[in-house]
Image (cartoon, rainbow, N blue to C red; front, side):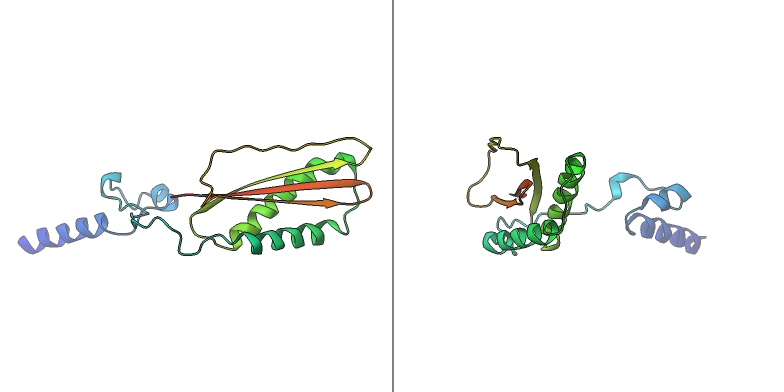
Length: 157
């Protein structure tokens, strides 16, 4: 009888200390443990600086090259400008994420407009840490349209 009790306590302990539940396991009802026993995903490192810090010059040249290669063959249509801005901002953010700068979150803003002798001024304000956070802005001009792209890299502790 004690061997059976020992075996059941080992099973319960292994279920409690096992891997975290995924949604598919929850749906199938394989694990019925409470969240009290779930191990936190991120533990404190007590490290304030990133091991892989953000490199502004490299990212500015990458962003400029990306805009030129993406837009050189593009034929501007005013009705598709919104979709172009959405696609560019998503792709820029993905390019920055691929560089895997540790502890940074990215916000990309792209403005696309017609060149019809009008004036445009873009202003952005933010509250941030000037040593850790960065903002990169690039412009692209074609004969019929312009693109202003800005990416903010915000340090996340």
